[in-house]
Image 1 (cartoon, rainbow, N blue to C red):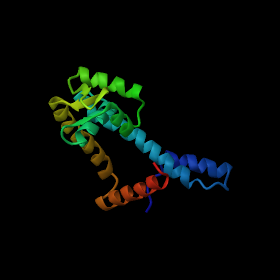
Image 2: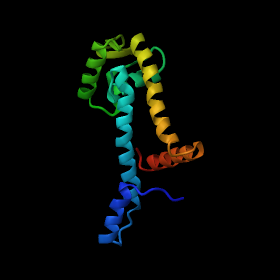
Image 3: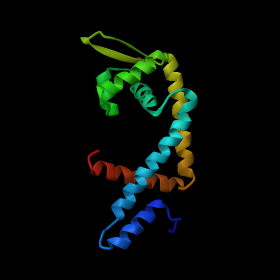
Image 4: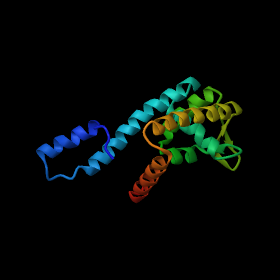
Length: 166
């Protein structure tokens, strides 16, 4: 299978010219993953923009939505799921609460704790936003891969991700 050279090919070719003994396959794989991640981040941001949210805010809303009814988690559970500091989480929760997309209330089981609950408005917004984000991702996949290739790539990336313990 031949494909059009990309910027990563140019980088690995430069290394091959100056250090021909190096195996640059890892650089080729992870360089493309990083570049894909950056390019898709821009597409996803564009997909979420009409909803007035950024990816980080979508992640909070989506985590609450995926948790199932009553769409409530503690800030600590959200932070752990999203790999955010509590300070970073507080800023996102403040913005989303001001927008009426979620609410915070005392935890009835822990006097010191809080519960974060997705509002009806937040649920409706995240349900639409997830479809827009998936459409952007699907468009990118279908522009280059058939269904079988996309599933194979997903499987290979899963294998790599689990092998490094992420």
